[in-house]
Structures are given as structure tokens and as C-alpha cells.
Length: 332
Ligand SMILES: *Cc1c(COP(=O)(O)O)cnc(C)c1O
Image (tube, rainbow, N blue to C red):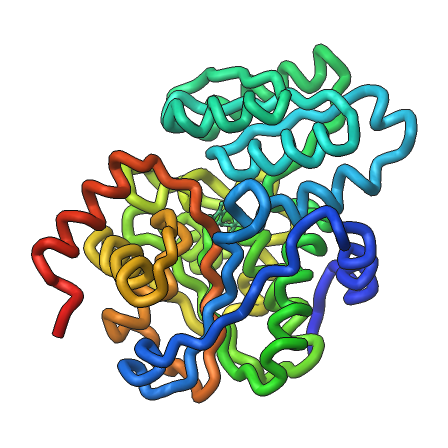
């Protein structure tokens, strides 16, 4: 029996609301990965999503659900980049003002991409938590509507629409590999999948350098983990010490937790380009990296891997992937 603080009806409502505003992304078979793993492996290409990540689903659902009065006040958020871009895009599309706070960790190309959607970008704080503090002050002072990156029922319901699409395109899915940071993506998709079939296994893939949610689930409360530079920078950031939704949902809905190394992330990125011509950012490639490294204890017989994003810093991307391709490390 599924105990979810968010009803499945909210997910269908989200799908209705964001239809036509975001892409219904393709799910493609990966014969090569299937051979290698011994399961039918499919890839859900949220890397092709508008703005370069799945986060527009939650952002559009949240922003399209605001009242007239809330829309007039405008919105504010803090973000490692993709959520900021998504909020800027959804707000811009709806003609409302948006402020996006980012930490100094966020690469400059990401801040620029957010500003390009017409949002006001505020760079402040050495960590995500410091940026969050500044964001709280601004939110109060300017009376803006906060749009959280993951711990919000509307955001979770928006990300859950990915789960509905997977069920439609692959009804026999029995396993899902989902990148995990704050847990909005996993909570949503797992809610949709397990509502249809509770025996579908949900595998969470985090990074060894910052497994914040995993540590928090273990501790039974939100814990802080030191942030370290990683190829999967979209998976950095705390889960919020006042976490209400995603911590209990991830704890309840996850069947297996995995953490991948930097080498494995790079392996996933390289494989996606070589075998599928797909550009993935580190966070988007953790599922493939985990499969290739044999880290998934039980990959099932029909596995959907969520490729969550493609916001890359091109010079760094070419460095990491190009070097590996030249080295031939992914070739048998
Ligand atoms: C935000 C993000 C994630 C993690 O999503 P959470 O809801 O925070 O767990 C994974 N991949 C990409 C590309 C992201 O932008």
C-alpha cells in the first residue's frame, strides 16, 4: 500500500496543465546497453526537454497554478542552474517576473542561460545553503512567491508526468533508474509508477561525492554533506533542513540506493555520445554509468533509465568525453 502525501489526481492535473508547454520526450531502446546488462534497457530522453532538463515540468505546473494576485507579485527561486532556467522559462512564458538566486559554485554559463530567459539573476553565497539564505531575505523583502526546486507538491506532481509517459510507452517496465539529489524527480516518477504497479522497482542513483539524500534517509532526518566539485553538479545541494515531502517519499518509494564515482559518470556520458549520439550532462548520465559499472544489484528484465539533462559546459564536456573517446576506454 502506497502512503503518499500527494494524490495521483495531482499528477494527472499536472499533465493536463503542462501539456503543450513542455515536450513529451521520447523513450528509446538501447540494444547495446541491453546486451551488456542482460535486460531490455530503455532511455527516457529528458535531456531533449525544453531548457535542457526535466525541471520545466515542475516549474510550469507550479507557475500555471498560481492565482492572479500571485502572478502579479512575481516569483523567486534558488537553484544550481537547471531549476533556475526552468523557472525563468515558465515565468517568461506566462509573462510574470522572476528572480533567480544562485551560489558562486554555479558555472557562469548557467547564470547566463537563466538571464537569457528574462529573469533577474542574483549571484550570492559560497554554498547552496548560503544562496538559500540570501534568497529567503529577498523573498521576504520583495514579497515574491517562492518556487522551490523539489520539496513542493506541485513540483513533484510536474516531474511525475515523466512516470505517466514511461508507463504509456513501456507498459511492461519493471525497474526504473532515476538520478537523485533533492528527490523531486524520484518522488514524482516513483509515485506514478508504483500507483500503477507497486512491484515496479525504483533505483535511486546519487553521486559518491554528495549522497545527501541517501545519508538523510539513513539518518531519518535531513543532514548536511560537504559539497565537492563533481561532473554531476546538478546533483549538488542540500535537501533543506525543513524538508517535508521528498525525504519521506524517497524513503518510502526507493527500493535500492546506488552512488556512482566520477569515473563512472564520465563513462556514462561517453557511452551516451558514442552509442546514441546523445549529449548528457553528468547528472543525466549517472544511470547509464551505474549500469555499465555493474552497480545495479537487480536491473530487472525491462528497465527504464531516466536521462535527466543536457546542460553542459561545452569545453569541459569535450575535455572529459573527447579524452575518453580518444583513449578508446569505452570500446571492448
Ligand atoms: C535537478 C536535477 C536532478 C535531480 O533532481 P532532484 O529532484 O533534485 O532529485 C537530476 N538531473 C538533473 C539534470 C537535474 O537538473
